[in-house]
Image (cartoon, rainbow, N blue to C red; front, side, top):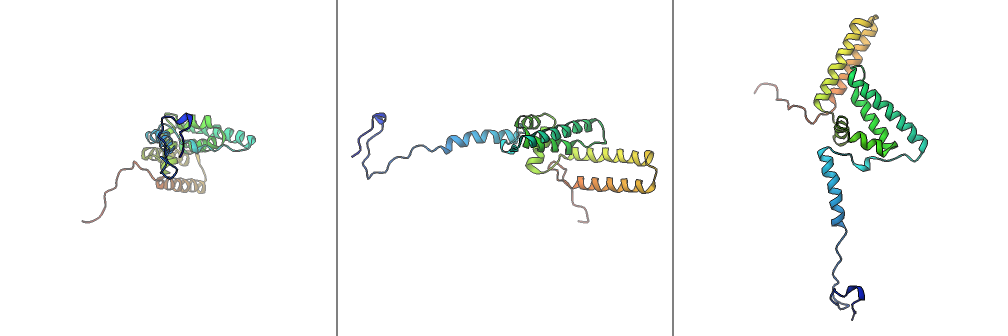
Length: 188
């Protein structure tokens, strides 16, 4: 027979052949902290910490930090000028920061304006419908003004027009979860 140990005076004695009660598992307490960030992610508050995988080389991290900062600056400039696209530069900055700096990555994904765009791309590989339409419209205006007023050779005008049409088609094909539903067209 087993005698109770000094630290287990409250626990009943068990025979060697009897089934021992199992201690509480650690799965329950661990599941609770993981549910909190997941709920915050769904609300759009923060990025998944597993997205940050810092590069092992300090030199590479410094280069990535510089490239990410340059992309962020170009993205911010793109807000005010229709020539530069904002979304691709912000997504590039987030990708660079995810490999270079946990602090900068968390700051960017928690940003009020840029965070939702980054998280939408990371989770669903989609761009907001309104953002996509604005990007296509501003690109069309910019290229149109360039073609009409600034470009002389006809071949260059045609090349810019084809480039713009191809880029607009590619951008339009990127999924948007908030796109309005299309009604079926045709006879009933």
